Length: 64
Image 1: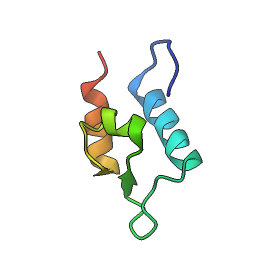
Image 2: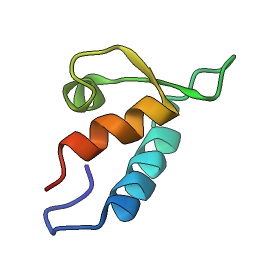
Image 3: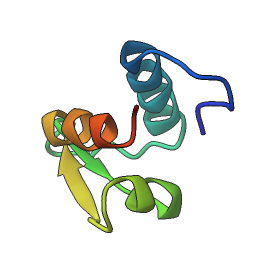
Image 4: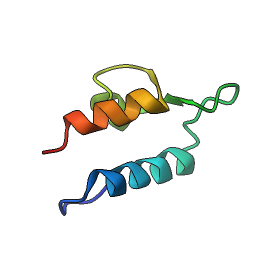
């Protein structure tokens, strides 16, 4: 989703937002909510929807 090379957290979040917008995964009524597809659901701990703030927190858990 974001590549194989190590990236700073800021770059990972930028690439995630690019993916979310390309796949049209933002909730139409509440743009702060992200609807997870199969790839994002793994990243989001199985949740179908998270807020953009929660997304940042969940992503940080996957970074070293």
